[in-house]
Image (cartoon, rainbow, N blue to C red; front, side, top):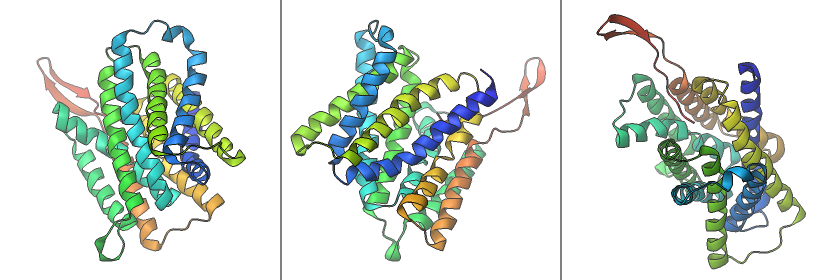
Length: 301
C-alpha cells in the first residue's frame, strides 16, 4: 500500500469520527447514554471479533486483564462525551475532545519523564486561550457539557498513553478488539443498574449502526492497518481535522453557528493542535562520532 492511499484511508476515518458527534445527538434523542454506549461497542466487538476471531482464541489472561483496563478508560471517554454532547454543540464537542493530542505529551512528561518540546508548550498555550474563548460564558463560567468533553479528552489521552505501554506486552489486534467488548459490557452493566433501557427507534438504530460499524469496527481496524504505511506525523495532522468535520456536520445538519469569539477560539484550538503535531526540523545532535542530524517528532495516536 502506498503512503498516499494510507493517508486517504485515514482521512475517510477522520470524516467518520467527525460525523460521530452528529450520530451521538441522533441516538441520544431516544436512548439513555450508557445503553447507547453498550449497543455501539457490543456491535463493534461482534463485528471486529468475527473478522479476527482466530486472534481471539490465542489470548491469555494478561491480555484480557489489559483489555478490561483499556475498556474502562474507553468507557469513561464515551460516558463523558455522550453526557456532555447533550448540553453542548457538536462543534464544541469536536474541538474540545480533540485536545487529546495536547494532553498526550503532557501526560507522557508527567508519568514517564519525557521532556516537553517548546513546540508542545506553545501548542498548549494556544489551545488554552482557544478553550477560554470557545467555552467561557459571561462571568467566567463554563457549561457542564463543555467541561465533560474536556474530561473526555483527558481520559482519552490516558487511554492512548496506557495503550502505548500495554501493546508492548500483548497482541495489539486482540487487545484492541477485546477492549471494545469490555467497554460494551461495563456500559451494559451500568445501564441495567441506573437506566431503563428500551427498544431503539429507527433513527437510533441508524446512529448505533453508523457508530458501531463506521466509527468503531471499521474506524479502528482501518487506522491500525493504514498507520503501518504512513508516518505518525502525517496521521496526527490528518486526525487533527476531526473537529473541523464535526463543526461542518453540525452546521449542515443541525444549523449550529458559533459566535465570533467562538470561531476565534476554535481557530486557536485547531492552530495549537496542528502546531504541536507538526514534525520538528532536523537539528544537529552531538554523538561520540561527532555531529549527526536527528529528527524529533510528536506521536499522538
